Length: 540
Image (cartoon, rainbow, N blue to C red):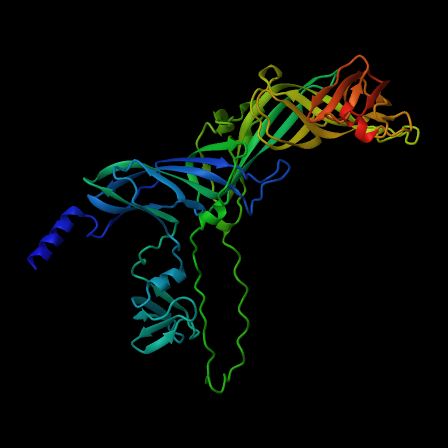
């Protein structure tokens, strides 16, 4: 007996926290917030964000203050994002580190209150149908909230809201583990106790972002070049029911290799409604003497919080007269990715969109390039047809041309000045462009520049072997200024090409040449192609 008592005392001294209930401590509201948004890695450059099902994610960092007692305790972080990926959470700044992580599975709701009060006393208040006077009495909850709710009172057992009179329940306490907001908690151990500033960092599902560009021609095209202004708006989507107030906002451009299913890992807590079922009046053996009840009313519309709110524009966009005055995000390197940091703190609203200007250039040098595909499958004698050339808006992403910044994927609207104000002339999509790259955007087909191209002999060049096939291109330019035309001669390595007085080059996987055509003139060029030498024996 003495040995057992000494052993128990020794174990208690060795593990002071394990034999005592952990103290639950609530961390303060965040004193500092940072939200870094990563776009949907599976969304193509020509796809819009889906406001009802965003598949991007965010890394959220919260700084909070917590006062810990001596020994083991549980820290509760109230109000984390409902799309939180709990396994990704890291808490730094604690002297004892993290012992265990937990995430609440159920939010405070009528059903959760009833289930938590099972076997306990509540207060039921009814209105007297004759006088309208309210009367209250104590009752004990005897069933869960998955059918008819039965209470035990002094009068016996009865179902709630089945007597046809107004009734309401009052609960003295909130059951343990329930919160009106999503909660993340950790267990920790502090040998001495104290107050600490700690940081909670985690990934959350249900975010996305995209760029939208507005290009406005500042000069009419003349010769081969013109000027334009380029303004880009960054649109951030938050599909979570939590807002992030006064947060530092960052967005990450580039595509990550994602292996985890963040949607499945998030597993947000649920708030179950209270659904009550009443039995018909009468004998259960003979059936009810009353007519069947009317069908239940349709469910109420979704609460406003679940609906996407209007776009919030940062920088008083509607009040500004000049794009040069708009707040601009700054660019930073993040490995092979690009990070854009919004210079002012903003609120990333729940179920909402946030817009911030992040690229603003007023003097970009650009030009139009007219592109024609010219391959030997057409025999000109059989098909004498002119086709419209494609118009490319081209520039180089460098400071000398007025840019020199990374341009993430997004949609672009191109405007041209007129006597009636700026007019929309084209819409196109951008892929990701790094600084220093050539930017080429397809914007329209030209009615002013048309081309005719094909072989001038009947023989198919694929069966000609080492024999040369003559090709001919005719380009007409009805503009009042000269133009540059790019001719796509075939995929790289597809043909041996002999072009007069000019070397071909490889561009986007095609062998090309670029020629100039004077204003209001037509230019015809002849050249020769044949199969590459390694294909002579097998194809000739």
